[in-house]
Image (cartoon, rainbow, N blue to C red):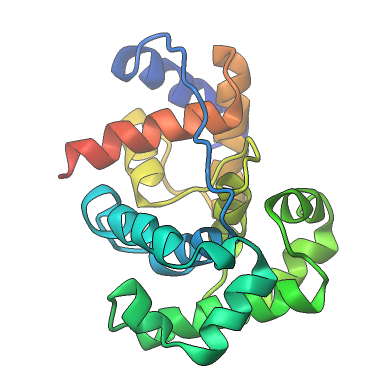
Length: 203
């Protein structure tokens, strides 16, 4: 199946399942501790009921962690698993790894990370962290306000319903981006509309 054909199928299914929109993109976070923890802890979690309240509590408890520098200072002296109320050593390690990569590249704020992700070098640097694949890199972009697509299980399920299955991550991402153009939506808004639709359906 070509990317073009998959995009057409996605667009057709979206018109039926989602309507015409508008589809506002997610706003993400301005608090860099929340960005890093969202990216590190979100996989296979129920987002609204499980992860979101923890991220909101983290921001309240650690206002000084709004920058990478501030977050890094916090996790040097405090247990992130306790702060997030998750016994998840691998995800804690991923959060530490992302933090270290950002700090090593002088990335401290949402705006800096947003701009850094324009460059392949930035994306490649994040991929050096164990547990960070292409989907997580794209998701980090969404968390700092970039209008893009991160293909997760919900987007794959929607694509399967549309008859667009068996594609690689890169192919399906491109198909969603092209479908957004066909529908006249921003990629980030379209992606988020699909995610909301499917994540609600499986609750």
